[in-house]
Length: 393
Image 1 (tube, rainbow, N blue to C red):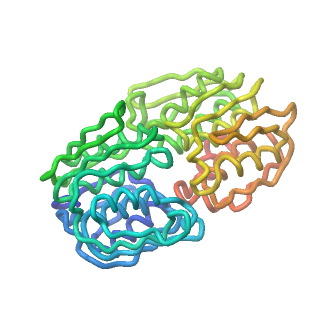
Image 2 (tube, one colour):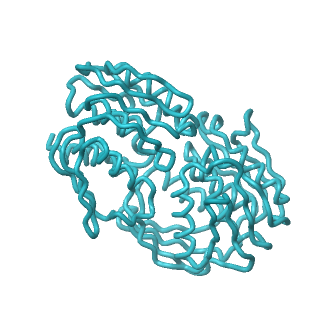
């Protein structure tokens, strides 16, 4: 949406990234991939989407469907966004309703307010809207990212608690790097973007993925030793950086460097923790919980049920196969570790985080088999190679 060419360094090579790039291409926006996909040259459209009509396939990328739905609805045009069968079960209704309040003609076609999403709109006429915050912070992030396309600016009030608020703060910081200022008020639950702001092209260094880093810090927590992840520090924009504090609460030692974070030593005891702000690491912590003394209770992650799979119910099913006793709650689960883990073939439910988390159990328990390991391509295609290099197997 900026004027001129932007350079994104440190891009994540993954299916999700490819889905976004392909969708932008269908909208007439060129993205050139360099250095194996880690460096992207994006030719900005100056706030005017080149193609005013397009059909987009977003696979199972929740980020893509939410961010593009908001931007395209605010820009005006005729668009339809669809994905795989699971995407048609993932709610986007709160975002659709918020856009309707801005004067957009938009409908979620599947039952329960799920994609496909059909947009037939002029640019948003109203300035003020309201959005539910308890399902996904990406609804609000999408509205904010697309707000420079709204002629009158944007003012959003949030009903209920907003999950994963650090991601909203991250959105604000990224937008500021491209020249657009956002006013956030977490205490009152609101956000404002003044009219007349436009994005400026920039060269932006993307932080390493803290969600992906959690698996390697967990290796230290499960197996002992020290794992250091470069490129992240205590001031990271990502809420998932708090995962290391959870490990600290379980008995690991955490060492912060200027441009790295190390986790040292094994986790020893269970923890009672609200993971609402870093819920993408809940599955990782659940596997660490199999190897400690005492129970671990994870709360605040009710919204995990509507991600790539039900990351509470299905996670509980698979942990039980390993011998754990698991109590399922509406907003999380309690894991009671077994005296001895048992071999198991673990289903992934086409969820990349299931596969990456469960692989960690196999580092200490033989006979752990991951069904459909290829699903890690969604965010981390070479995960198993990197894991093998780390542990020397």
